[in-house]
Length: 256
Image (cartoon, rainbow, N blue to C red):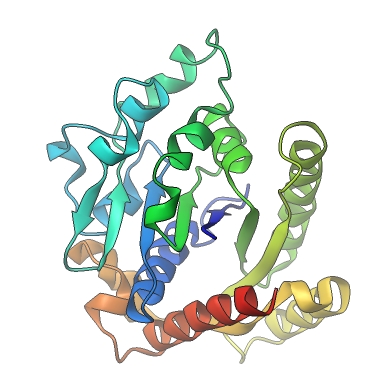
């Protein structure tokens, strides 16, 4: 069965796109068939997967407006080993254009259903705001992977996200749940980060992934080369951690 996961956090700057592209590349490395969907008009996940958003003839915008299918709009990232349903600035207009249409929050779900059997995992990179685009992602998904830094403000943002997921679960998508919390940009030398990490484990227990992604310069450099860190520098600590995280995801699903 295909697993569709949103990578979401209503707080900006927590590494959602970094997590999405590196998890996609990590899953591809451990033998999984992956589609990465970019739902952010900035198109960073598209560019970070080695795909030039300016040259795309069809994007997720066309899919949402039902002028193209996923099969027509997806492109292959040969360097990264996974397929990309890309985004560019056009997507910002979808918010306005979808306001009056039928099934506006289910457009992506219906589109992905047509290609689901082609993949083991579909990963959706959501924008930081709770918009109609994010709602389309949440309505499509079986669960949410939440990347978060172990800092105080991140805990506040997490409570907002949990409430959002509960509302979507109650009203729009009965399958939706939090799959797990991924601790990113982690520096074990900082006492506060260790304390917040312990709080997370105490409160969310098995929902906290075992893998921890360390703060890593090579992961931060990789997007400027249009690649996930896992491909840009496979030997970097952060890259190794993301491949371990991908394997943890696969193992979790086998046990479920």
